[in-house]
Every structure is written in structure tokens, then in C-alpha cells.
Image (cartoon, each protein chain N blue to C red):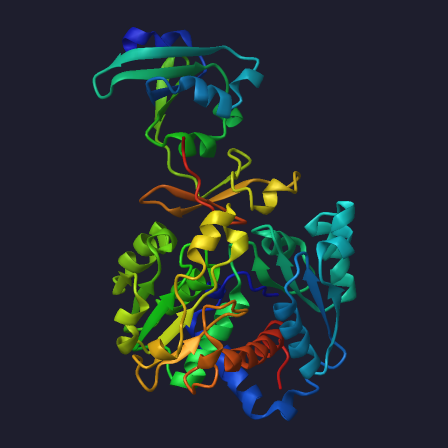
Length: 305
Length: 144
């Protein structure tokens, strides 16, 4: 039985197969409409994340399966002090697969050690959020046709943004990838990413402060939200949150094939005037999120269609 | 070693080449206070190799000692095993791949911060830089 804790749990070859499956689901949804008939997905969300939970639930429902679960810790037995291990033992009797979101890092890993069913990490604190990374990879591969030979700009909160760290870790496994990191000094990528991931593999990158200076050379621009909950004081948050806003004027500097991605929800870092630009791919990204979760559920349940 | 009168231990072992000043830390991590046998701590002994060093002599079987813990604390320590007043074996240490319940994860966002019964497990992720990370949250352990 396999679980998914980190995007690196899959080899590049396994990822290729997963993404191929997701693309087949996209093309032939009716073929998969009953693939998980009689199966149940449990969504165990100890902290609210409506978007991720609904994406998982949509994925299971579109596979003909059913869902149960809770959407915050207060409505679960965790409020009574039950351990994650005990909860997953119980859920293993109720469902065939589960997606767990927890504000504490490593909670899904704890669950996977005693679980009788596959556990998907649906986000654990600032640690990992592998299905977001799978979504990003599927979006890039589907819309650009490749995961190699790309220059990827990452903009915004690069210090605390786990989606950014995860995506970097996943992309450095492909050939001829280079990065441009666009952030204020205070929110630059952490040293361990720079040293242990990029320098260790000889992946080229540059760090800049102004989005305008680098727009022209990017294949992908990955925008991120400056998250209030990652800050320890309000003053820093207010000072930095509006630092980088993507608007029509900046989009004029970009190439015709550059794609804008965003893990969503956005606050104001992408102006709504960009939404109608054909290069804005963030809502298509949401759709790919459902396809990749469908492919993941099928893979972990070992359902052949 | 002769000057330090190892001969007084008939059966047991000597932890040699401990960095000067760290013997009490090792005493604590190895739970030597729980042993009933003779334990001698020598601080600031002269050493050709290190200038000054600490030494711990323990009169019991090596089986009672967690060598992984010792390797984690300082893998340059050497172990001299004594039988019938003689050193019969010198043993080196390696960095353990995994250590359980020796150090605690200090990341306030880690699941171990709220679930007290969980083992604190650290995994060696970079042997060259001697980096250990929490098995759950992957936070790097920083030696004081």
C-alpha cells in the first residue's frame, strides 16, 4: 500500500504515468465516471481549506465514488483529544482512502504509519502540499507540452511559501530548468533550498527584486500570495503584502507564450484585469487539480480502467 | 592510556577521546546514572592528539550502552573494550542512520509538539554535513 506524503515520493517515471493518466481523464472523462464505484474517500481536514477539500471531493465524485469526512478540527474527535493515530485507525474501517489536512507538520506521516488505507497529505502546516505540486506539474506539462527546458519565475513569498519550495524540488529533477526568484529581500528563498537543492545540483537561478526586469525571459510566472498566517506580526504583513502585483502593464513585457500560474486563492497580487489574458492559466490550473487528484486516487487504490 | 591506570577496570570499557568538557553531556545521554556499576569520569586529561580530552570508564558490559546515541553525540570517540585488565578491542563509531527518543524536535509546528506519546525520530539526511532531520516535519536538528 502506498501513501503520498511528498511530491518526491514518486519517481520521475511514476509521475509521468500519473500525469499521462490525468490527461487521459481530461480527454475521456466518461471512461472514468464509475471507476471508483463502491469506494469511499475520507477527507480529514483538521484545519479548514475549502478549496483543497472540494477538489478532492469533486475528484472522488467524478470517479463515481463517495465521500465522508470533517472540515475542521472542532467538528472531529480531535477536539476531544483523540490522537491522529487513533483517528486514522477508525477511519480505516469507514473508508478506502483518505486525504488529510493538518496544521501540524508531519501529522499525515504519523497517520500513514498505522493506517489500513492509503493516506494522501493534503497539506501539513508549512511543510508539504504534494497535490498542489502535482497540479502545478500537470498544468505546466499540459499547457507547455514539457517539463524540461523551462525558465520559471517564482514571485512573492518565497521564504514561507511551501508550494514554491515543493515545486522547486520537483522541477530540479528535469533537464535544463532554470529559475528566476522575484521577491523582496525579507521573503527570499531559504538558504537550504539555495544550497542543498539548487547549488548541489548545479541548477542555474537568479534572484531579483523587480518583476518588470525579468518578465521578458520567462516561460512560466508562478505568483504566490503573501500569507498572513505565516507572519508573526501584522506590521510586517501589511508592509510586504502589496509588494508585487501583476497587472496588464507588466503583462505587456512578457512573451506571447508565457503562462501565469497561481496556487490560489489570490488576494490582490494578480489584478483582475489579467484574468481575461489568454496567458492567465490559474483557473485552468484549478481544473487540472481535479484531474490530477482523480489520477492519484486511481493510482493509490490500484484501480485499472 | 597507561598513565590513566586502565588496569583498574577488570571487565568493561573506556570511552576515549571525548572532547574536553563534554563528558557530563554523554553521561546524561547514555543514562549512566541508571547503571549500578562503577563509572569514572576523567575531565581534562592530557592528550597528544587533542590537547585536552575527557574519558569515561565504565565497569559493565557494552551491551548496556546505546552506541547509536554515542555515535550521534560524537563519532570521533573511541571505545576500548577491557577484559582481564587488558584492552582487547578498540572500536570506532559511526553516525547512526536514525535515532529514536534521544533529542526532541523543537519545531512548534511539528505534530510531536501536540502528541506527547509519539517517538521523537531523527533521520540522517546528509552524512557529509552530519544533518539530522525530524522524521515527521523534516526540521533540521541544530546542535547547541
